[in-house]
Every structure is written in C-alpha cells, then in structure tokens.
Amino acid sequence: MTTNLATYSVVLTYSAMAVYVIAFISFALDMAKRSGQVASAAGAGSAAPAERTVATVQGGTVVLEKVDTGRSSSGGGGTKFERVGMAMTILALVLHVGATVLRGIAADRVPWGNMFEFSLTGTALITLIFLLVQFWQNLKFLGVFITGLTIILLGIATVNYWVPVVPLQPALQSYWLVLHVFVAIAGTGFFALGAGLAVAQLVQTHRQGRPTSKQLRFMETLPDADRLEVLTYRVLLVGFVLWTFTLIAGAIWAERAWGRYWGWDTKEVWTFIIWVVYAGYIHARATRGWRGARSSWLALIGFAAVMFNFSVVNVFFKGLHSYSGL
Image 1 (cartoon, rainbow, N blue to C red):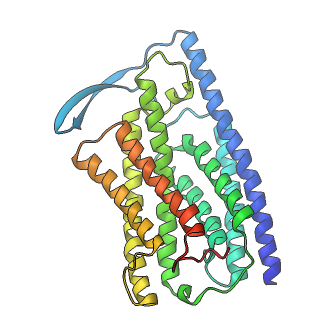
Image 2: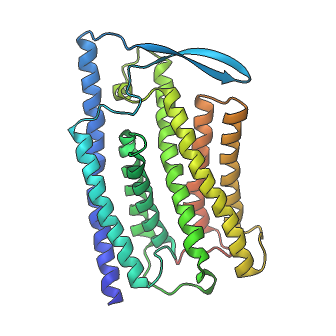
Image 3: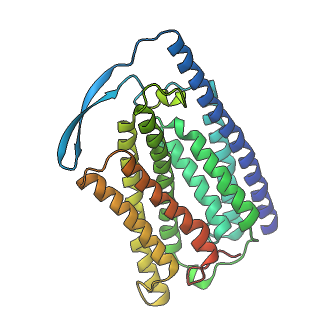
C-alpha cells in the first residue's frame, strides 16, 4: 500500500510539472501580447502617460521625483493568456498538493523529512503563497517567474533528490519538525516572491532611466519602480518575520535534540547568514534611505543565500542537519 501511494505521488508530481509548463508558456505569451499592445498604442500616437510627484527620503534628504502613473498600480492589463496561466497554475497546484499529501500518507508523517519531500512541499507552498497574495495585490505578472522557478526546483528534486519512503531519523521525530520546517518553507515562499519583485524593479528602474527604450515593452503595463520597491519591502518583511521564528525555533529544537542551542553547524550558520542579509536589507531601507537598485540587489543576494542553503548546504555539507537522504 505504501509503495502504491508513493508511486501515485510521483505520477501526480510529473503531471503537475507538465501543467506548470503550460502555465509558464501562457504567462510568457501574456508578456509578448502585452508588448504588442503597448507597441500598437505607441504607434497610434496615444497620449503620454500622466505623471505625479513623489517625495522620497535619500540619506536624510527629501527628494521630489516625477513618476509615471500611466501604468496600473496593481499590475493589471493582462490578456487571455494570463487567465489561462492562472487557471493552469491553480490546476497544477491541485495536482501538486495531491502528490504531497499522498507522499505524507505513504510515509505516515509530515511530507518534509528529506530533500525530495522538502522540495515537493516547498514548491507547492511557494505557488500557494503566490496565488493567495493575489487577494491582496495583483501580482500575476510574476507568474512566469514563479512557475519557472517551481518547474526548475521540482525537476531537480525528481531527478536528483528522489528517495523511497523511509522512517524519520530519531532527531527528527519531534513536533518541532512540523513548526520549524513548515515556517521555514513559508518564509522561503515570501523570499521567492520578493526576489521576483526585486528583478521586476531592477528592470523597471533601468527602463525608466531610458525613456526612449523599446525593449521589454510589457514592463509599461506593470507598476512603476517605486511601487515595485514598496511591494518588495512589504513581502520580504513578512518573510523576515517567518525566518526569525525559524531561527529561534531551530535553536530551541537543537537544545531538545542535542543539548545545546547553538553549535556552529553549517546549516545553523547559513540560516543565520540569511537572517543577517535580510535584516541588513530592512535596516538599510528603513533607516539609511536605500532606494532603487541598491535595495533590489541586496534582496536578490538574500534569495541567492536561501537557494545556496537549500541546494548546496543541504546536499554537500555534512553535519548534524544532513537529513537529505541522498
């Protein structure tokens, strides 16, 4: 029975990946369609977008800047391809969650006891967070980034990380596995969303600095760079709070499992490094007036540290946290 459920889980995982590919293509076509619409409007001699003056603080100095308000502040203006992409993303997530649940039932525990299961659950939660955030802010333009990231991570997991269902190691047989790891995965989901927004902000900042640029015209249908920066900050702030809990919960669990709160294990060190990078991002933006490309690059450095922690530290560094099962 356990073997059958694990097999069905794999089948659903591959099915979800196929649907994610359709969603990715749909979101990419949406971008191409938007670019065509903007080019057509420009060729028809549409009126120039309105501007408004925004006050920002840079190094303690108040700076007045004119920003474009012609773009949708919520990232609207999607096409039928965007609607197809969202529908396919929802369908893929249903299959994805089904695969995750079956894996958990087969293992008779939460489905994140090794690298494959962590990848399976983590990518599902990243997609779920992306969909839920739409009720707060229209961020559908990040669909191509989120589905692309999910496809890559799931592909790596199924090819390199898959292992049969096995019992948990003694150190993992704790309720802290549910709290600590689940919150870490949720924090990673918000960091991924923030990374996508940071990339969009960098591109938008570059384009706004070159008003005559005809490259990546679909960016004209997205929020302006200032709005993207605010959205990035808010999303990463949520991720930082979750990661702070992850760090504290991990220390408490370490004391219960190994009799000490901190032992300079590689995983512990990199978890703290990630926390420091994002703390630096929040501090620099809130108190030092960092704006524009500098804050975006720091956000991306933080996400690179998260990916390094996930893909390199978990697999190639040996220590007390070597639970990859590989």
